[in-house]
Amino acid sequence: MTDIWLHNTRTRKKELFEPLDPANVRMYVCGPTVYDRAHLGNARPVVVFDVLYRLLRHVYGENHVTYVRNFTDVDDKINARAKESGRPIGEITAETTQWYLDDMGALGALEPDAMPRATGFIPQMVAMIEGLIASGHAYEAEGHVLFRVRSYEAYGKLSGRSVDDMIAGARVEVAPYKEDPMDFVLWKPSSDDLPGWESPWGRGRPGWHIECSAMAFELLGPSFDIHGGGNDLMFPHHENEIAQSCCAHPEGDFARYWLHNEMLQVEGKKMSKSLGNFFTVHDLLEQGVPGEVIRLVFLGTHYRKPMDWTEKKREEAEAVLREWRGLVAGVEPTGPDAEVVSLIADDLNTAGAITRLHALAKAISANPQKDCFYEKGVFLASAQVMGLLTEALSGWDAAVEVSGDVSALVETLLTARAEARKAKDFARADALRDGFAEAGLIVKDTADGAVWEMGPKFDAAKLEALR
Figure 1: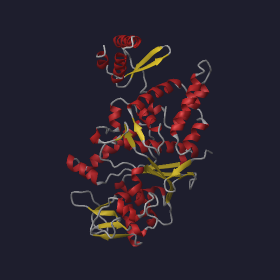
Figure 2: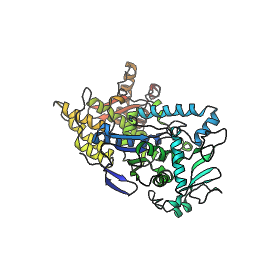
Figure 3: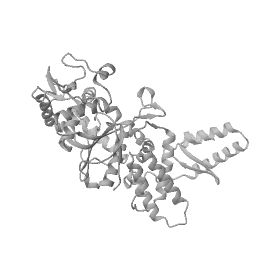
Figure 4: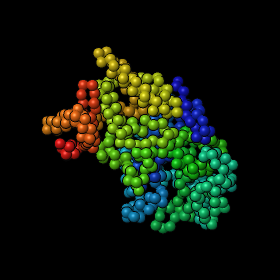
């Protein structure tokens, strides 16, 4: 059996993964708050943990892995969206949940084994809160129930901070009913115009952190193997999950391995609406960027490193996938390459696995006369361990029909560029090169001359303007 090594955030080192029960490997990943479209950064943990899910299924068997990813469908952001739009909350959460599933499916993500919604587990949350009050780890104050952070000695171990340092350096909600500034809300009152449920503390709704603890316990038990999410959730969300879960169920360990992916940037800058570089997965798909291309760009960077989305990476990924799909056309997958699997099993080294796939593809292409069906089957199976070259993501690479007029125009412009280079008119040659890119024309210079194809953003009008 393949050994899997994972970097455990809690211990800050890479550890051999040893599941509690190899017949039922259990993983929980924090899902979205469903009030709007998922932006590109939201998609990164989905792809990261989809690769881990596929790896676990490959190593332990498809029927021996339980993957849970939740939906937060009760939240102040959802309430605000309902108020500003005038639409019912249930209508908004149902719509945005389906948007999320559709967009993540377009990236090739398998659906988890369970996708609980917070509103379906309110009784379990109330029961957990009651237990925390009874054991002295929580208290009621002015209709709120709060967790006593200092009652859990290990608080801060995940994020590596002391409680006093957190108070000094973090923004904490100051409220007169808190015993300590670090105490966090487990339950809060709801006015008549907000969603609410009856509880021993009056009509109200749960705090964010208790949701995941209650759902994880109900579906995976007091101890399970892996908990994942973006590193922006490490504090306070995951820290609070650990505290309340371990205090509510001291017989368990909650999650044993913690994995956190780094954040996403766009063209070297933090994605932000103010910078004009904020976009959703749906935006890219609508622009004609295939989901498989987005996935390959993501996997080209190790999950614990910041990922930079660039137009250049998108173009390169699309060209690579077109080549790879052409290579395996009509081929059935066999067993994956052992080195590819070993690289993925080494703390999800997808970048290294992609480098190995390039080497395999190069070796196959170097022997065009050889019967390489077996090697191609190994290559295909290896890519599919990462969710690439799957049947579900196929079809986008179909060749675009090129009219005679467009083809003649391209050849004319390529000839003009060659003549400009020959005449050392580099300004004209560079202008044509840049114009090709702006028009969505992909041009590659080879020893036998320039070859070209139309990209997904091809614009004939922009090409015409280059005459």
